[in-house]
Every structure is written in C-alpha cells, then in structure tokens.
Image (tube, rainbow, N blue to C red):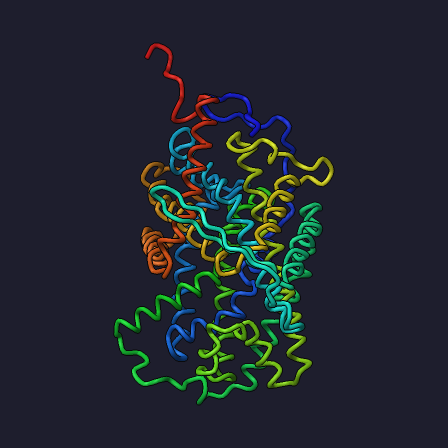
Length: 495
C-alpha cells in the first residue's frame, strides 16, 4: 500500500494526473454497452429459463427481466448524468453518502470489491467462451486436475472453492491476454475495435433470429402445457428463477458510466447510452428466444438445462436447419461475441481503481496513466492478471460469488442512494431525471433483494461477500487512521 498525502478535508488530486481523452460519441458508447451486455450468457441460458417455468411461458422471464433492467437503468442514468466522471459507481457512492463521511468508506469498499468482482466477471466470460468452443473440440471440457479448498472461519463459517484445470483453461487465459493486448492503446483506437467486434455480435444474433423466423413453427412455439398461467406458488417460484437468470443476461448497461470521462457530452450521452442499449438488447433477446422456441421443442430445451449440451443449443439448432457447417459457423460467431463482452468489461472496469487512486482513496499505483497512450495501464494490467488467476475456478462458483458481491456492494447501495441523494441535495443539477420517480428505484431495490435471498445457496455465497467486506473495512480503517481521514478526522480548532 502506498499512502498518498494526508488530506483531512477534501482529498487532493494527483498532480501527475494526465486527463483522459474524450474520444467517444453516443454511437461508440451504445456499442460498448451492448458488447458488455451480450456475452455468451443469452446463448446458453434459454434451457435454464424454459426449465424453470416448464414451457414457452418462460418468455415472461425475459419480459420482466427487461422491465427490471429499465428500472435500474433509470437509476444509473440519473446518477451517471449528474456525476459524469471516470469510475461511475465509485463517484456515485462517495457523493450520495458523503465524500468526507460514510461515502468515503463505501466508495473505497466498492473499488475494493471491483478489484475482485471485475476479474471474476471477466473470467466468467472467458470460461463461458472456452465452454462454447467445446463444440469444435469436445475434449476442451475434460478436467485434467482439480482441488477443493476449505477454510474454517469463526462466526462466519466455512469457505469453499474448487480450482479446476481443464483442456479449455488455456483457451480462457488466451482470451484474457488477447483482450489486454487489444486494450493497450488510445481510447480512439479502441472505439474502432468496438465497431469491428460489434459486427460479429450483431451478425450472430441476426442469423439466429432470421433462421428462427423463417423456420418458425407456430404450433411448436405455443405448445403450452396445461395450467401454464395458473397463478400457483410453483408459477411464481419458476418466474422468479427465470427472472434471476434473465437479469444476469441484461447486466452491463452501467458499463459506460465507468468511462464517462472519455465520453463527449457525458451529461447527455451517458443516460442515452444506458437506456438505448437496454432497449436494443431487450428487443434482440425477446426476438431471439421466441424464434428459438419456434424451431426447437421446449421439452427438448428443458431436458438439456442441467447438462453440458445446453452450451451448444444454438449450434445444434443451426446444424439441424442448414447442416454441420452452420453449427460450426454460429459457434465461431458466438465465441466472437463472448470475447467482445470480455473486451468491453475489461475496458470499463479498468477505469474504476484509476478514478479512486486519483482521488487519494485507493492504492496510488492504480492512478498512473500511460505517458503516450493516456490510459490507466497499471489498472488494466492488474485486473487482467487477476482474471487469469480466476480462470482456474469453476464457472458456477465464479458466477455465484460475482452476483452476491455486486448486489450487496453496488446495486442495492445505488438504488437506495438515488433517493437519499434527492432528499439530501434536492437542488443538485440533474441533467436527466428518472421517469416516475421514485418507483423505478424502489422496484430495483426490491428486485435486488429478491435476487439475493432467492438463491439456493444464499448463505454460503454471502460468506464470500462478508469476508471481502470485513477485510476491506479493516484495510480502510488502518489506512484512514494513519492519514487522519473519516472516521478519524481531527477535531476542528477550538472544539
């Protein structure tokens, strides 16, 4: 840890700071958000959603998931327009809860968890990529070695993790390395790369949708089971499980807030990018899944929900319609799409530790900007290195830990915080105000609470978040005591 200069009042800025380049317009901002949102997830989760609801009525999961994304997107849009600085949620939490009060610790904890949850998110995308690549070479899923780790902690309980090496692990690691190499350049060049990657993303979705619509079997798509819409406890349980999966697939609309300092006219373009990307992705997801249900019987999809074959649903569908070549072609496009998401995730999250370090609220080394290329290269390399390490974890464990950490230390604090900020600073300039305030924020908060407590292994997964918070609080308090920051601010003169 490299402590910066003491600052009992507002934190001083890093005098070595070189401003980032405002090189992204609205089009690039929307593209980067969409690339973040559309990873491998929507191509492999349709069997899970159909299995959860037991029929084509599973489309309700995608519809309600989209409405939930809009509610939280309105929260993000208002905060992003009001505070358009690099780091996104770091600045939101600091300002909402007080830059020299609780907000300083909460913003530190946010960056602390991002240092782990961001590489987890990147690793999950790379592991999903390698799993889908198994369609080309089935042995990629073969396990070569594994080891279970157990750590018993007082009060908290036992922590468990499984390290796995498969034949596909090098593929996942290579994806991280390639993303870091492509991102090691100016933001203006990265905008060009994002457009190139978007060709593969939209190409894969367009081909699947076109195939589904041109081979659509209405009878198959609406082959509803008996009592499909009876409002029984089982119906609501299934709907909740389907919404949970769909909501994960929509995540990523907040990514552009991390890059606000590199967006032109961020007070306008950031909220537009958030809401436009949600609308575009919702239409694509709904159309794609409806078209698939018209080609592949839902009972067949449901039967693959818990088997490795669910990774290849789209490939199998295209193979049936066009032949083996189409299965391989769509697999290549989906792998391309998964990599595009990893690319966008790493780009956005690398700006978070940078923003905090620049503010004197995180390790100083992360505030370094490349002298010629003008981007936070140390932050990029650090997150990439941790993502490589997390590629040795099981995909299911990675996703579970990621979800709980994000909900507790980011999403809930923001959805409640936007109301807190309205109450505390009613006259604050807000270039964008959420529609139907405060209902979107309340619905988003309730949705996140449901997602948190409805998880089957909730207690086990929360332990990881608790340990992360306890360690983060300890580091913050030790550091703040040394630097005379909140809650160890010196008493005013004459007190």
